[in-house]
View (cartoon, rainbow, N blue to C red):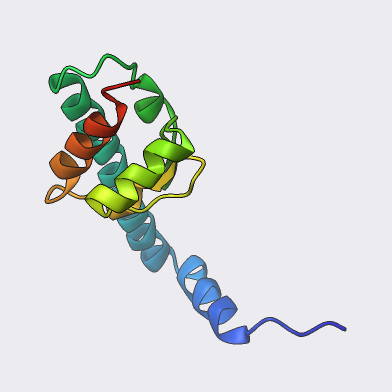
Length: 118
């Protein structure tokens, strides 16, 4: 059985991409969002390195996109969740979109704490 996808979303996309002015504005907004995530990746890595973490963190800035594989073990992820209330998947994938200038230092400190004994 097949259900048709909603038409509303497709019409919005068609309107934006079909109008050169709206498309230009949309592309600028997407760039702002992407640059913010790139900046948070850099800030997170810088904070971890400033804390003296013995682990390499260049993979944080080498990756792209909204999510980041941290390299944390399931046990370290459990500690982040239970002790610091930072939520990520058990394979260590974290949403970079959820990290901002107000919480990036907290996230870095928490990651540093759970990886100190590694």
